[in-house]
Length: 261
Length: 303
Image 1 (tube, rainbow over the protein chains, first blue to last red):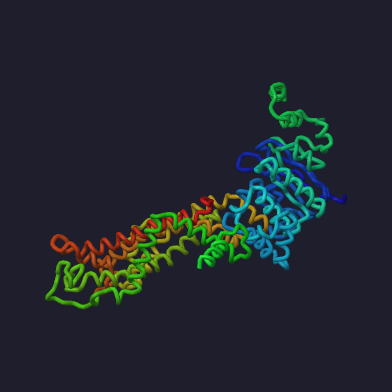
Image 2 (image 1 turned 90 degrees about the vertical axis):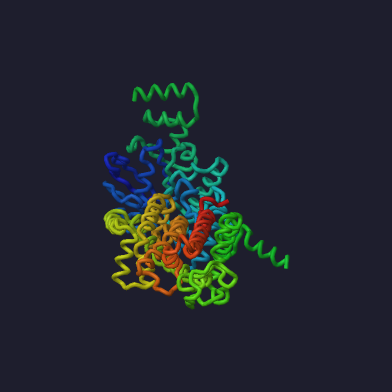
């Protein structure tokens, strides 16, 4: 573990009058898997979009793979960090075949041997060559998400940014995608930054995590503490309780702590 | 034969296409199948094909020359010699109708070729770029929209010189603003979608996104709008012809034929009514076909 691969300091993003992310600071080491959790609207996806270069209007300092994010051109950033979107039904162009989706990435970055690369990356995400010329409507949700992962991986980035990669999928497929991500991370030494509201997914895949609320990072801890359910902050405890599903006693406790906090 | 047909069918319906061309063919086949199951769209296609055939084989289908005058047989009612009667110069209305289909299709074709690309390009660029580019392009569009279309076309044709080609050009130049508006509206919704964000994340340039990702999705609604505009295009061409700025006599243009028949509409109604019916049928054909085409091309209705 050398210096951090992703480093974010005092990141602030404003959309008009509202502050989506408020001085967020965290760093992710090489090969580490880092979770960013929080409820809807807590700003976690915004952080990811900044790191992917989709949001350009922000203040603070952020670097990806040792390069200052402010000075990166989108094309060179693309080779360092890639984003996998939440909803595979929305993130693939409805008129583009799998081949076109992957071939386009190869064409933009002028990769050599595009044919071999496309076949290899499809195999790596567990799709055979028979899927190569299909349209998204000919694929299941899990297969689509595999294509989205393949699109991110064909550039061989060192960092994979994952925006709730499983929440649009049904439970059995979720496990498939999580296993795929774990295997790819081991094989390629990827650094993962995973955004999710699902604590089980974080406990499963990540070593460290940060909890966000209303644009602020309220707590950073390791997954071991999360598994033992020993957070320092009351809000994190609420999240853990809420993630166990609804039960009357929990609901009462959450309501109480919300009033107190 | 049936063996060959079934292997072709397999080739077109197999879930595992083996090449880019194979996938494209399958896609076209699927669109065609959806179109084929739509009776009104097929009726529209039938009308269009029929009129195209009539235009192509006009010399064989027409019974007389469209230009030959016979002043001894003016304004004759339909008969065995002149199936749809004769006009005020004794010309055979049926033959003029047949030859007029060539002019009508030429107007429609050229106007589509002019307005479609301009409207699509301006709308997609304005919608995707946003900011001052959007403002500038949309204000230009507003200027064109502010004039009644016929008046603008009139000004252009009188400036360019009165003939059918200049009329087509004028109609084309005045026809793109509504298409640009439509393309811009479509682009605004497409731009916000995840797959466009995904294209930006992989480093695609704005040009690549607009041409390769946005425009293909704008096409279905644009095609429908274009086909719905066809009737109006023919009527404006007719209006220009009527004012002496479009088709020049003795060119057999349907709109000009109506204009000429107007003088006799109470006594020899068929002279105006017959080209009117022809315009109506052609517009109907395009409307029905356009509507079916939208359903067939719409990616959201994929089975």
